[in-house]
Amino acid sequence: MPSAAGEARETTGARARARVGVLSLQGDFERHAASLATLGVEPVRVTLPRDLEGVVALVMPGGESTTMLRLLETTGLRAPVEAFARAHPVLGTCAGLILLGSGSEGLPATTFGVLDVAVERNAYGRQIDSFSAEVQAPVVGGAFQGVFIRAPRIRAVGAGVTVVATRNGEPVGVRQGEAVGLCFHPELTGDLRFHRWFLGEVAGLPLPAAGDATSGAGGAAGAGGAVAGEAR
Ligand code: GLN
Image (cartoon, rainbow, N blue to C red; front, side):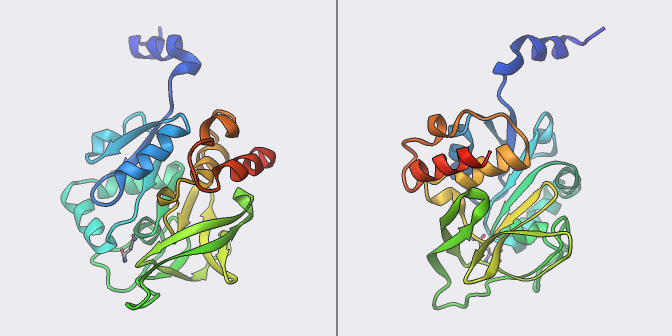
């Protein structure tokens, strides 16, 4: 006998939007949430373990990885978020990448290690610690403008890791199974191609056609949407 909740889900059927969490300890919930909503999924603010219920994928935004690791402990989110990241699609940007990686200097706790990459925090130095630069990302159709904010550098990549974005030949985006990590902030440019690729290709969620959801998003969304559509 199906439960009432199960029946409710069935009757809403294809119209129910997939729930995608955005870890919201610190860092940019709003911009990621706006990108997700534009692509037709329901963004869910994750601040407590129970917020992960019914969530099918998770975004771990930028922020300060030291603070985020401490807050994960004090909120009781460390174990559930780490378990979630091992078993579901997860996108980490900047500090989120640091948390997903296999380790970095100066952190108060171990990182999750779902991405087998060694990461150096704040690796671009103080004078030029924030900048915007073109990265090469064939998975989203080619050039993508990356916003790097006190960004980490990926210093070593394990055998099971696929590089999905480079800058001057250096990896700035990686994927291992359903885990994706980016050194830059795709949520700040209005170009939704990385979110679209993560939700559609990595998480396997049905999304509206590229032209519908990304038109009017600004930046390279028009051209990018067309390329992403071809790649599907
Ligand atoms: N410098 C930050 C850290 O080490 C990351 C910066 C960011 O997320 N934009 O955690």
